[in-house]
Image 1 (cartoon, helix red, strand yellow):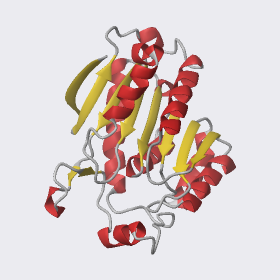
Image 2 (spheres, one colour):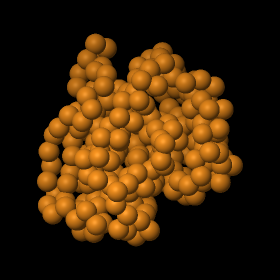
Image 3 (tube, rainbow, N blue to C red):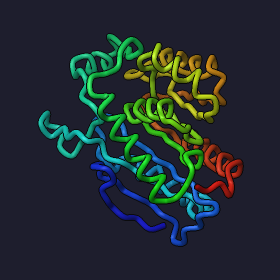
Length: 251
């Protein structure tokens, strides 16, 4: 794999590309980090997947966008975000006092971030000459919220969605979009003891996907707000299965 750093539609990105681009079977995975993480936080996920399986390293391009907001101003130097959050409520969730509930509203700043990521996806489709169903969107925590939003809003659906430790956001809007989405393969994982984004809320998100009759696989695990090895192994199988169903479809 070749690793480069580039700006795509005003978002800085780390990009992994196969040494030889085979466009007849090329697929793309876009993974977005969570709040308070460095922009390259999920690069290690791509490294794990590529090292684990040569098929993935030879047929997948990975793109890791960096959130547009710096958190240097609050002392989290080198950390990024897709939108700002209520830090007091965030700390209360960490302390186990009041888990976050995003289901009633659209977080302030999320729409702008979603539009930026949507532009990036459109540019990637043109640059790599692939159809949208050859793209998997995914992320961790806040990164999975933005990719879920984009996956539901895109004019043409992406081929897959990976939701790692995400949560239900703006329930009424997402439900309406999900029912109209038609086709979308989803892999969702969540720790049963997650103190930040509750397992109950993750189950509600799962219920939304199922009510919309979207193809959905759910992996609950004994853990917290994290990406475990079991999640990585399941992610590997998910994207390989996805690619086998979407061969030789180019623009």
